[in-house]
Length: 287
Image (cartoon, rainbow, N blue to C red; front, side, top):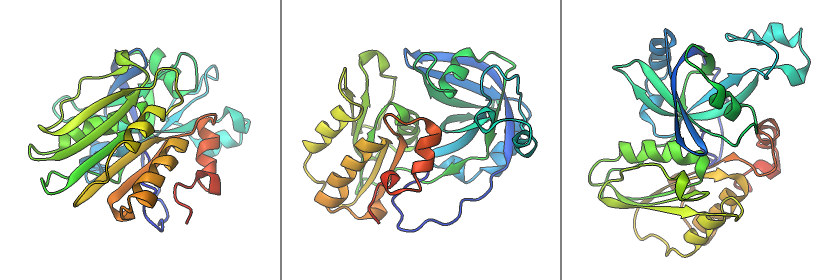
């Protein structure tokens, strides 16, 4: 969803073009996961603008979503709305992974983790109907797995990163190898994924445990990898920081081999979480 926090220095983020898609249909994949299929005239411009980024597995977009009950419809003129609305009533940005791109159907799919009426994006996805519109940025992307059998892929994810893991598994060649540890609430939240023969996919169920608890326990039981490795570790901020301690501090993996980033933070709404990325509490690495 978001670019890796692994690089020592960050260049200014580009201003990405905006696109307005139309909902074609939705699917309830699990009790907590809804897939929204989006099409319309925006498809060609979106694909053209993000041709390189859409080849990445961690391909993310910034959605713009209106607060419920205000009657706002995309495309949003944010400059005008800032002069007319209170700050809390402005459309909000949310970061999501593009799960798939169907060039024949000219649609993209985005998966939403939903928990009833909690948040803004999840309720929008639950209520979405054909013809509804959704505004998003051109895609970004920062990581893809290795299909080289000499390189081990280690994927660590919670519910929020399942779409990126799914894309990564689909992008791997038949000779790819490694391990994917994916934490969800329980068996009903597993989705059908097909890894290559040389990669083990291990579902972890946290039950009533804290987000990331099952993932960190499984990671702590592993031996450090021998030989080249590429790591994708994304999920709840506190858990990702603890994973960094194992991967970088304890195992000594080079930061260049790590795509490690927080997609969300326990107890934080999205706006506060994003703002904290610029503060020490939001940093995955100390420097």
